[in-house]
Length: 166
Image (cartoon, rainbow, N blue to C red):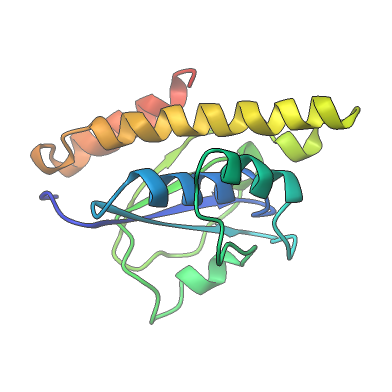
């Protein structure tokens, strides 16, 4: 893979929090080098309101973010994907569609902030923590010399990043 524009898909079951955060953050920080998308195996149909709040506070553009099915990215007219990351353990265990472009895949599991129970402050902390951890992982991705790594080395590095704590 040479230095070029990389299409990256983030998958989570509901596509309402973690995958949406990853999409928005990478599109904000990735410049012309990355274009991020997100999808869910069983999309909830809406983005969690706290996801949008946290992203806006981070200075991310939230316009156009929506909960969508991963089927959109397996269609013949879908963008060719370079990388696909599952960001929740449940989605990692599901059988994924065949992605156009034979992308590199890796699992980067993060706790689900939408599953946190308690008062609004506890839920808010969970979303902020998720955004912080996902942003740190994406900064690691952006710092990789992707164009100088062969496919196997890059896949191994991306998978190792998922095994490390963000």
